[in-house]
Length: 120
Image 1: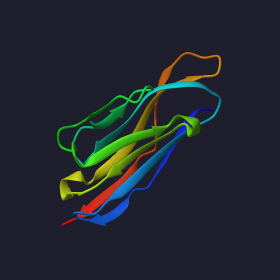
Image 2: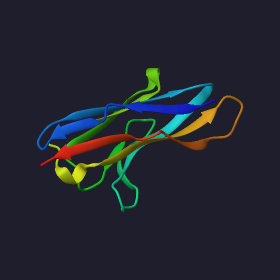
Image 3: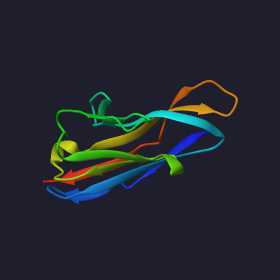
Image 4: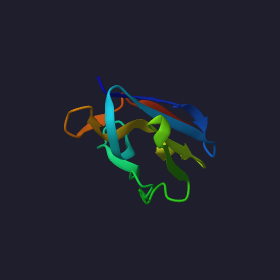
């Protein structure tokens, strides 16, 4: 019953901005770490940014200073603000969260992915 729904991807010119959102829904008891990953065609899936339940963040070196991850615990939602976008940021972006469903053990969940395309 628990799943993640993400949105906010699209096409943008180099130097532009986008904000991704990911909301968890279902019978949720608690959520620990949340994060964003991305995967370009022919490449592996890599960590972009991560945020703990207490608000501690970390970023990939390639996006540090340009991207900001945040969360709204009351809404079970994580965001990724992306500024000064580059063509090399083009990828499918996936939301990830460690979630404990009601009366169950904590497991890892993934969103469906949202396409971000940056034109040069």
